[in-house]
Image 1 (tube, rainbow, N blue to C red):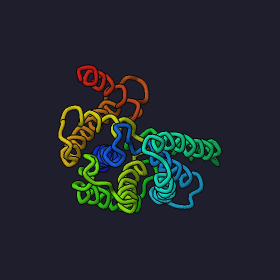
Image 2: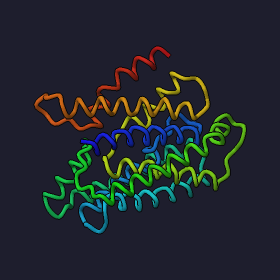
Image 3: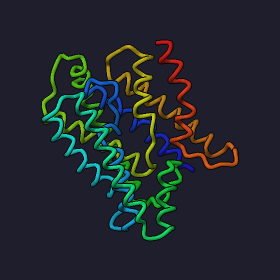
Length: 262
């Protein structure tokens, strides 16, 4: 129970902060930690680790996400921001397809069940080891520290006052990857909060200071995840409720109201 709530907190911070960084880095409100395939790569790595047993969940996710990040960085040197988002969506679909192939060829039903329970993102920590927890906490700490340290330059980049160098962009992508992996490798894929919550924050707060959006997005992300976690695990509707799907259902009306009003 305590570990589950700890990862509600970590995922509620890591994914929205990573999403805000993506939006500021590409100056595009469609920026998202899943839009460049990072989330899909983390799932592919976790699937490969579960099915083969060649490494732990977090190590598998980390390796695949690192490879994906390097590919995305090479692409950023050659295409415009608009085309990069399109490429990222297509690339994410490709990586997700590889994950589907890995999962559907599971050696046995027990491993398949273990993967799907992990993928349901209900914070049950299926197949998670002590090493996984330690590694993910280190990734989260490094990614969050990097987000805070680069906040001023990223805000100026968003405003158009400066243009970040390629090396700076590469380091930012790496830091975002750390945040994504710290959450997804343990909790499974969690949609909405890395795209919807940053956009909600920017609707509610017109400031361009990214630090304010870190704070607002983190508060909303943790709050939404906590409510969803309690509903999914303690409201008996007679069916199994995955966290990610339940959150989208609960949060969509709020998104619709705010977007229509604005």
